[in-house]
Image 1 (tube, protein in one colour):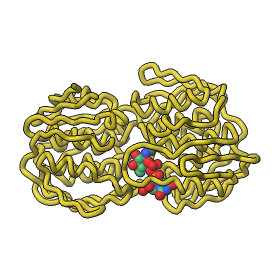
Image 2 (cartoon, protein in one colour):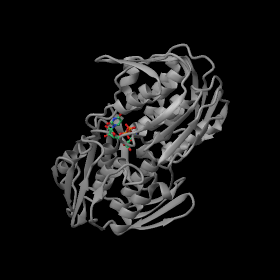
Image 3 (tube, rainbow, N blue to C red):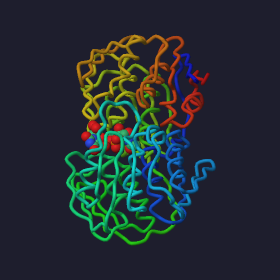
Image 4 (cartoon, rainbow, N blue to C red):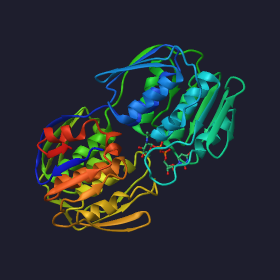
Amino acid sequence: MKNIEIIGGKRLSGKLRIHGAKNSVLPIIAGAMLNSGKTVIKDCPNLSDVHSAFNILRNLGCKVALAGNVAEIDAEDVTCSSIPDDLMKEMRSSVMFLGAIISRCGNACISCPGGCDLGPRPIDLHIKAFRELGVEIEETEKYIYCKKNSELFGGNICLDFPSVGATENIMLLTAKSDGVTIIDNPAKEPEIVDLQNFLNSMGADISGAGTDKITIRGVRTLRDTIYTVIPDRIAASTYLCAAAGCGGEVTLLNVVPQHIDKVIWVLRNAGCYIFESENAVKIISDGKLKAVSGIETHPHPGFPTDVQAPVMAALSMTQGTTIFIENLFKGRFRHVAELQKMGADITRFNQVAAVRGVERLSGAEVVATDLRGGAALVIAGLMAEGKTIISDILHIDRGYEHIEKDLALLGANIRRV
Ligand code: UD1
């Protein structure tokens, strides 16, 4: 098992291109199987989660190839409608295949999904919506069996919570159908808009993504497409947090500034200078940050839960106290104990954490507890004095393409050992 080793204390400077969005490409990969033909995905990030999604497609009978950052999927033959347990456990987003498999095959069988351990991650909203749309579902302790007895005629779905996964799954289930489906209270994340744009590029008729209501007019057939995935706003935010905490001058290319406006707002309040252009963001930081008035995670357009841990690391060396409230995932403070090992002064009570800024962090041996928590430890390691060794970095590889190479390009003393 490999570790990441960091000797902290370097300022970061230079330019970095941000890779395509993991959270966009995963449902897009599932969506490729809706068309009995070829899909080319450009700017496909080369991540372990993406390879897990490819393995699911291969297991279903599709052909997949990735050359550089261009993925080619041939979904002419889909020969299977179930996903084996080991593939399901590799990542939570495997549940994303449910809608696409039912649409393509008429039935599906999956076991309960795996992924980051962020506390309970039910899929009741997916199941409820599918049932309302006419899918028969039988749940056992380990498996979920789904069957569509006739064509789907659409319907009105009102989500109790704007779940990203449920919104995407409904779009994938109904893009090819005989009726009109309306999703009220859908998730509004940029990745939802990207999925709409991708499906429409295949000939689907979907509108309203990014607003309070999505309308999916089912179509009978889809066609081949070539599609470029949006930039990864969470990776961009992570590198901004690293530059903010370490100090330096970093320009990130291939970024949509509006997608990360809440993160930019927080870092500006912490004392960084941030300049936005159409598809780039430049940050200048002296590394001496101020606490901010409070950070509370919410569904988009609120502050993203995925950036809570990276921002916490950046704000662990500040003057003053920042209060964090995590509203989305109960288990998303697991990095707190690891940051404490490095000298961070954090008091946690349930979903609230008070981060009292310290003068210095010290290198330590820490464990990447989950994807974004792992990224937070990388940031803390870059800011700390001395050596930090991060283990269980497989979590980090799920969401960042060569994180150590990118940070080394910016001048960090970081390597995989
Ligand atoms: C997606 C993202 C993840 C991000 C999250 C919230 C991907 C691959 N992952 O995850 O990085 O942190 O959105 O922005 O895109 N919930 C239920 N029942 C359900 C579904 C969700 O109670 O059926 C709850 C979850 O437990 C959680 C909240 O709703 O508390 C948000 O979940 P959801 O928006 O579905 O997140 P994911 O799609 O899993």
